[in-house]
Length: 80
Image 1: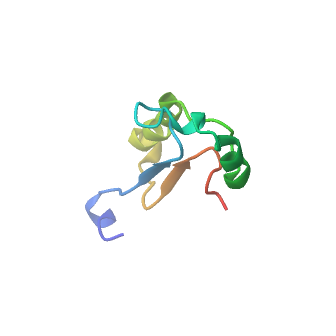
Image 2: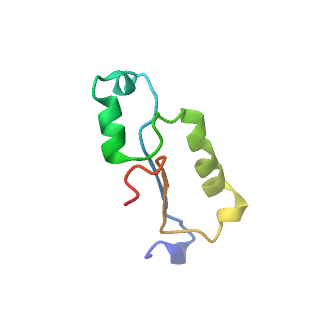
Image 3: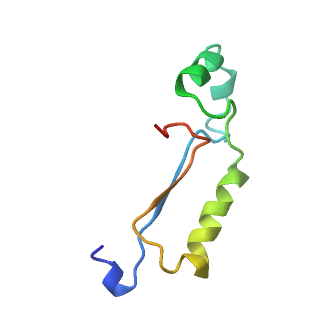
């Protein structure tokens, strides 16, 4: 909040599991189905393109009054 008076907005985006070169093996693990049952949410990793909407919003004029928030793009994982 101390930055708002200077016109600086501070926000974050918290992605869940995203399919990248670093995570290619996650959904291929033998216990993947068990983990999905435990953690809940969508039974797949996100495509990196699915994160774009959150970034576009925060960069748009529509978010000019948005500060101090986190946007989870996590397919419901961690929502509870």
